[in-house]
Figure 1 (spheres, helix red, strand yellow):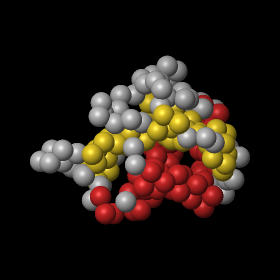
Figure 2 (tube, helix red, strand yellow):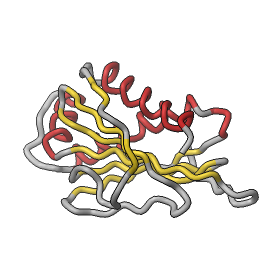
Figure 3 (cartoon, one colour):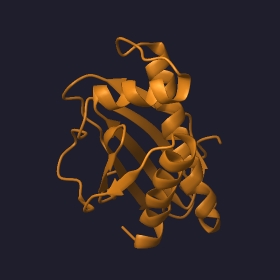
Figure 4 (cartoon, one colour):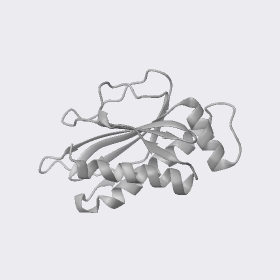
Length: 162
């Protein structure tokens, strides 16, 4: 996958954590996604369409998801409830939206976020993409952003809202 498609997600993730959550964030070593299983048990997914199609997955540990929800809402939930799901969805939307703004030349659209909670769930990226994993350590816990985008073939661009 082209680096000019990856860097906006890196920048957007750092911006969201620093500006919206007041959290320090440190990037780990990017790598190719080796499996369909996300790094952690809570995943926010959002689809992209346009001249590229695919998805981005923001994967968080249970504790990280609870910490982010506490940071955003001012109260710590005791479990992975609807507030946590909504918070992870909004976090995913902010990261995807921030990246999309930096990728205007590709005329991308984003869909609505979906959140999956549970150990050992699987995510399938487009078969024509080679997903990249961007791991991060934050004050709120570890996260991983997986990006799997493939160039759309002529006449196959679909719209995904947003």
